[in-house]
Image 1 (cartoon, rainbow, N blue to C red):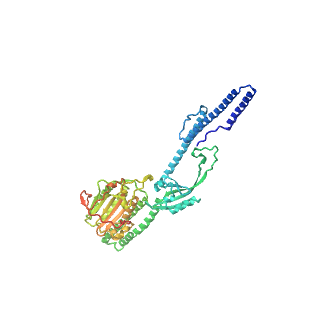
Image 2: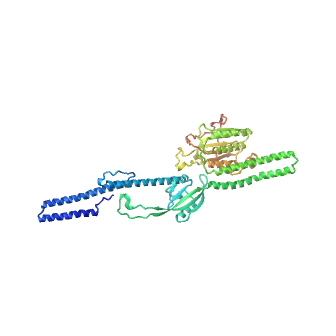
Image 3: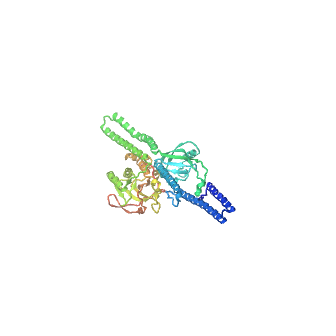
Length: 540
């Protein structure tokens, strides 16, 4: 409640100084007979009424100014001093000018705060501000994209469950020095961060109880600001640097291991050509052919190692391009037709007429399809089919919940079944099949089910390892199904750009589809998947 203005003491004293002498004079005049009693009483009443009118006028004017000032305090825009008495218009105008100056200064401060907020949000590194209770008070845009919008006003441990980082934050909040911690986030793709935790203090002005609910205290006691202890957590992505270091180490280790055998063979053949076979043209031709094969194998190996290293370096950076899967598969199959014809193998491409594009890198996805189709051509029986089937699938079937939404915006519900649309590409051969014990290791580097056969066919043992890392970058999935004596099916799942699960209707057994050459082809039922859906993590 606003307090009403009361007449000041000097005004009351001045009125009394006028009324008391007047009352004395009137009384003396009545007793001396100089003035009639009725006239004296009327004069006294008139004087008293004048004093009351003075007090009422003062109180009215003071209340008007007080109300105007109170309305200015609650308004965000300048207000005209309506109803202000003429005598106080100058004072009201001065108060209005002060209010406008205050509004301009407040707007200037607000704009500066907005600019500071925009600068913090524009920082490429995630930044979090925690209070003394480890509650996240502020988070910039990059941090919200990494941890989600719900990180604010919650304990840091609810979003970042790394004990070393939490212990460092607690230590700084207890008054410790700055800390630097390196840690790894394993999902959705493994990323390495360097966390810097620094102490931060700011002055906090406590609210004055006397100013709450509009109550005004004439002389509020000054309240000194309190110091709030806080901590700033900054995360620097060092994934590229760590991957680069690991890439160099792996390249040296892998190259030294895999190049040892062909180099030893080359040295042996060179010594033979310089010695016993110096004058034997037939042996020279044979040995030179073998040396050419060994040198070609080393070239393929080095190229695959370099390709794998480049892919691993960017694995944590999700691509954002649009790729037409069917078009890329048509190009891959056209490029491998000649290789397939050498073994009388027919390549079939089966795809629906309408298929959404996928989110990905065109060159890398072409490499995935080329590796899978090339492997199928190598290991299928002669005079058989290699079938490439494309369909729209429910990502929930392979544990895919959707790509991270930009800007930390929550994902919308895509379909009634709660999944996210993915484009599946299945490459099925009619080879000897792979025993179940080998499936979990197929995408390991240099892992071979039949090492001698793989080397004879020119394989480096890195094809499926490259496929795995490309799919990791694309947030995709790879499933491997195989039956000994029947064949194998390698299925790639890629996130669709515009999911629409209503079109992802499953195809029944013996369904008629269209092959690459435009002829109708009736496919046999898909082999039953292995229990639990075996996935390969290695190369053939």
